Length: 210
Ligand code: HEC
Image 1 (cartoon, protein in one colour):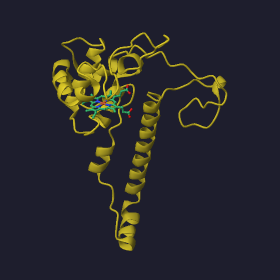
Image 2: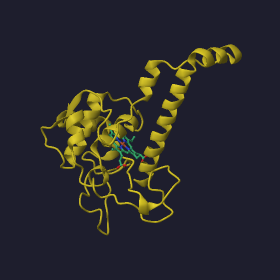
Image 3: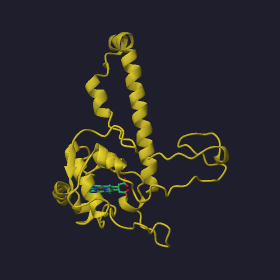
Image 4: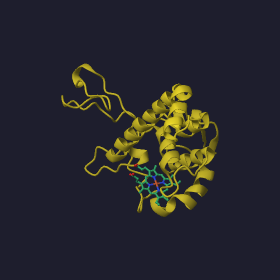
């Protein structure tokens, strides 16, 4: 899971870099791109459609969640077809991670880290699935399907009812069991903000990246 957090943080950083590049490209579009096309014969101004396709970040508090919704029942059918082969029919794990269980056991001798026991925010689950799953066909699910399968996984973890339908508002309202389980790392040489090189600990409040 540490690897996941790191890679998510990396992905976000990369996305921001791309967004920044896109802005720079747009700003320079008139002069720069025309010049580049002339001089090197490649490149084109970034179109609004291309920016929309990259701009899929969903934030921990639910900002940027799309319209649409999905139910636990719909999610169960999608999960059986597209996820169970790797994650097990009830999320118990297989070639892919275990996705269910372990709630309340993180502090035990044998912590089990799953979506239910470890992830602090539910909107991150939507972001991750939409961005990365199924492993062999990332970004092939539409928003409704992602809402549905997210709802199903939360249901398997006992966090929403069998008849639940989730949308942007209800997903962001879910309080994950481990929301308050992350604590600042007090070691003086550990930056408290992901990616920052400055200051330790004592005079700052830690922030989480997801
Ligand atoms: C071909 C196998 C495969 C399929 C199919 C697949 N996954 Fe995964 N999944 C993985 C693997 C492998 C990982 C671990 C990836 C990593 O850590 O980079 C993973 C990770 C995840 C995680 C993160 C778990 C964690 O706690 O870190 C979630 C959530 C998830 N998958 C959901 C889904 C959903 C939902 C589907 C179906 C829409 C799906 N997966 C389909 C293989 C698969």
